[in-house]
Image (tube, rainbow, N blue to C red; front, side, top):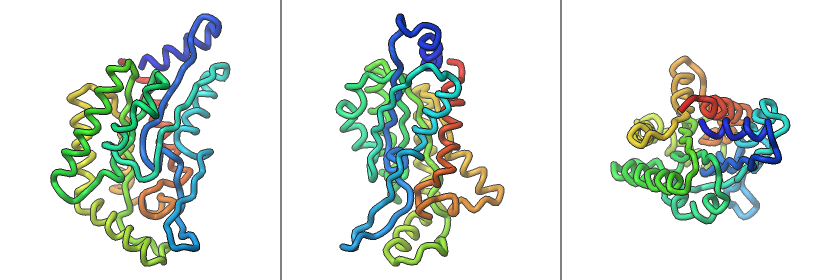
Length: 242
């Protein structure tokens, strides 16, 4: 991808090459959310730990590859966000920073059980891709992790169990697969580079890995360690040739 060529040029000559900016647009996983808990008023809350978000791991890897290049990160992940909301705030949170590359990751909150949910999700992604291209940003669409496939024994709060039950139904019943398949087809149609982490999670599950226990909240937030998988796959995608 051109982003790596630009970083390499910057490494060779700082004074005559402009800086490099990478934006990350997505939901709670992009924002760096992990465990969940309840506040005194009973409201659900999440643990925020940006130091272990996948975009920070991407920065760490790029710092190893190009130690003399400063890569500017735009953190545009919001907990609870969906693709249509990401499209609505794209100008404010991403485009005004003129990123060289934008990593887009949606799906966890977009997934619904009704057929029109896939069309809404894919339509919003199309709008995001079109606006990013018009603005001159390269794009990587990263598929998210799997949701829980069962109810973890670590969950004891009835409200958390209720959420986990609904997510397991969406995961096991094929609704989430349908959304990700729709996003993959859109990427093929629009020639958008795909970083298919969901496919890796599915293969792990097929090979006997308990993917529910790889989730920090046992529902949909991957552990800090599993965020490294996202980062590795994203850097590998950046290194692919056009």
